[in-house]
Length: 126
Image (tube, rainbow, N blue to C red; front, side):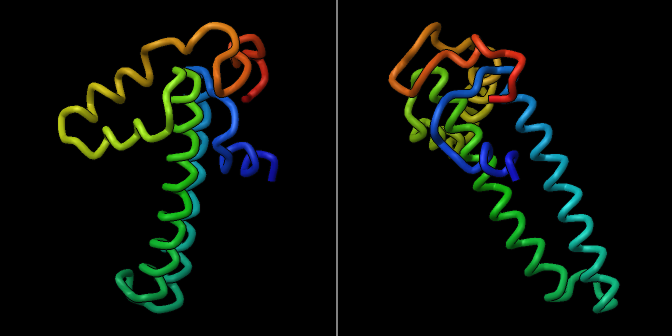
């Protein structure tokens, strides 16, 4: 539950390493959950494209996507940017450069308007 409490919040900041950790962990968890839901739904219905498969996996994908957005907002907070900057992902080609920016540029040093510097506690998952 503690992991979910840390994922489903936009408070605070995530440095590059913590951002990468959370994205990888959350992606793996999401993939496993989708696989299990699809397997169970397919087993119960006998059809991999039935409502028992598509509805639960669709709902989980939406929930998982919201978590991923919240993780990215916290990374933007480390860069002293508003979460609204994520809208750049909707622009083709710009999204690629923006993703590189999020992964490569270090966060602002010291405290910024979104909280304390997370790199000071680099051993703790932020």
